Length: 242
Ligand SMILES: Nc1ncnc2c1ncn2[C@@H]1O[C@H](COP(=O)(O)OP(=O)(O)OP(=O)(O)O)[C@@H](O)[C@H]1O
Ligand SMILES: [Mg+2]
Image 1 (spheres, protein in one colour):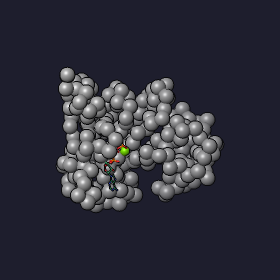
Image 2 (tube, rainbow, N blue to C red):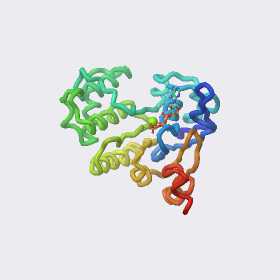
Image 3 (tube, rainbow, N blue to C red):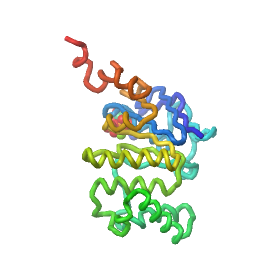
Image 4 (cartoon, protein in one colour):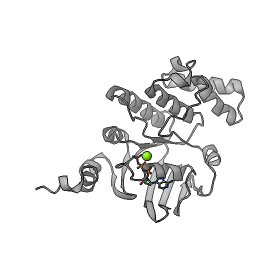
């Protein structure tokens, strides 16, 4: 089972946020998507999840074109995302934040709560279950956001900057959760991060975007050895060797 973006372009007026982007992700795999601010990473997620119509190109999930599908329909097909900002229901506790997703999928309240507790426990976050979502520390909010996305039992999970604002130790914890999501749940993970070290250490394959274009792709060594990537991150003037 795979998720394939094929020659995706997105134009906002005359501005091309994405220009002919192709990305491939399989179940059980972590694929990294990196690039400077404004490169088009979040726009890719929005296209995949049906929040943004592409100007051209196709998104194929398990052999089916999902271009014209609504976001809720795409979620039901096994694709879940987290948002750059938490977006938890602040009036509910953590367990209910997960359980409402189950109820929304037509599971009973009881079954939804059981599944929510099972997932929190699996993530090592059972102690958060009864806390109000509103007061959560930032990194716990992130973990709950991921747990909530997993309530969809997704085949593919799209993580947009999950480590933003985390310390090194917290990012390492997150890395082991992402590894387990791929290995134990056999979920395909698209990982967007400014923490390039985290992405390179976790990903089977990495795509580097800059100004809407793919400027490099490959494994860790290919990315680390790339002149184009160095220039995108540092600016060409730092790499011309004067
Ligand atoms: N709805 C929109 N209308 C107009 N321009 C947009 C819209 N959404 C995104 N853009 C522009 O498209 C470009 C890509 O934005 P995007 O959010 O995908 O970048 P990003 O790689 O996720 O950046 P960051 O690392 O800052 O999150 C940016 O220049 C952004 O301003
Ligand atoms: Mg973004």
